[in-house]
Length: 115
Length: 112
Image 1 (cartoon, helix red, strand yellow):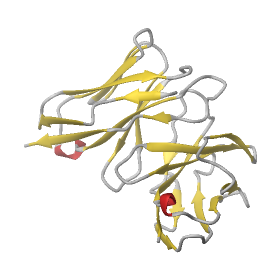
Image 2 (tube, helix red, strand yellow):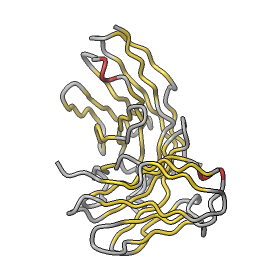
Image 3 (cartoon, one colour):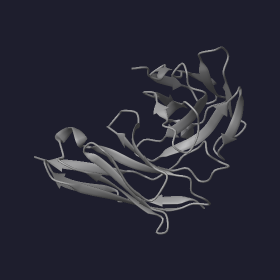
Image 4 (cartoon, chains in turn yellow, purple):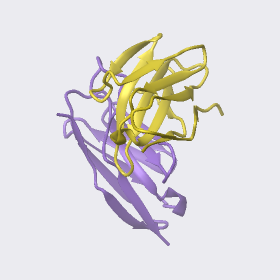
């Protein structure tokens, strides 16, 4: 069964550095998402992406964040000038058609630790 | 603001039935989803309700009452592997049909 993959599984960085988290969505899916989950807390929506542009973003997704689909398979989340509070698990998800009943399939996540 | 309320923890016995409730207060509503997350794992989709009523998928069922802004997930014949956190999530409205607003999760503890 196709699945969403994410790399790296764990990223450790120094405060102020830039990180790029990578995702390969399921190949025939058209809608892509990034979520984050601070340890022990709920999942929080960051951004959705369709047709090579951002569809929607939350208040968390400020100028520090950007997303890109650099080729036909990868979907990346860039975090500039990381802060301690950016430490969290970041999940990529993809969906086939983005409608109300669409299932979002989640990748295994990247654990980001900012020191 | 937008909020979803669910119990933080529920304990049940193996083989029993458990119900996890979710009430929501959002700017709009376009469907309630349930996800399961094992410790250290990714959320996995369990069920979706777009209309009032009960949806059944094997041992899991989900119910929605839009007039009450309320839904629940029912797990039957509990197995030890069902020990996980369960999240309800809402699509706020049709114009915003991409993002999911999540509850804080219910940790289900199953005892032998």
